[in-house]
Amino acid sequence: MGYLLIIACGKKDSQQPIPTAPAPQAPTAAVLLFPVQNEECTAGIVVSNTQSTIAFSWKSAEYAESYELHVKNLENGISIFQSTMLTSLNLTLSRNTPYSWYVVSKNIKSATAANSATWKFYNSGPGKTTYAPFPAEIVSPEMGQKLNAADKVTLDWIGSDVDEDILNYDVYLGTSQNPSLLKEKVLESVLNEVNVNPNTTYYWKIITRDKEGNSSDSGVFCLV
Image (tube, rainbow, N blue to C red; front, top):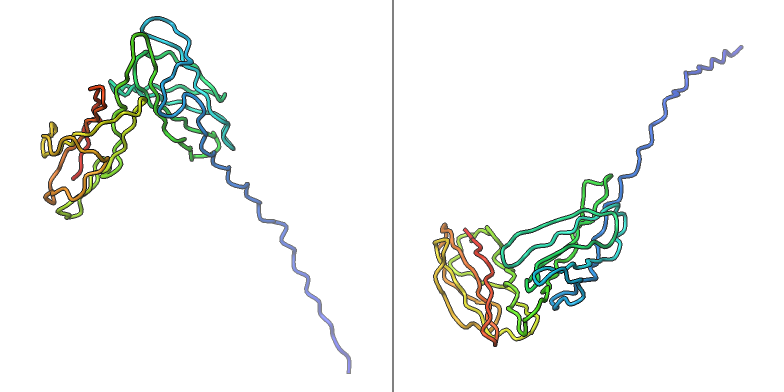
């Protein structure tokens, strides 16, 4: 008995899967160096009685191709920002004025940017022996946070001062955009068990006062 051996040869698929490029690495957050957090800044170059040039600097961030420096005047709320590929940038700012600043790390190949921590400093000037506290930083409730049918809420904030002589806080809360005084001369930076009504929009702010009689206004925040 004979045997017939049949071998079938199929055409080999020449199409190989196209390798995909790895996703670009998102940049990490920069580490701030100068001006130092919560300090009087005295290392600026004086331009006039009202202005000085501050040399901002930070550590390089991994995978960052460029940076965006954000600086906010804490007295008038005006912010400025500039881009750079370096880890330092000079800005001319008003003297005798508090500021906050942070740096955004960017990479053109990544859709994700990274924000550094936010630091505050006081750009010193002539004739100042004491400094007003920095405007209180609101922690909770955050701007626009919903009450979730709660009838009590905890107001929490952070106070800071170059002179480290904060005396107390006045807390304002109400349903108008110009809230009324809720409690004065609060010693801690928190107020617990504050009565509120659900489904109501509230506005609140903090006035920080130091031992020299200086004060600052956090600005008004709302919760609904």
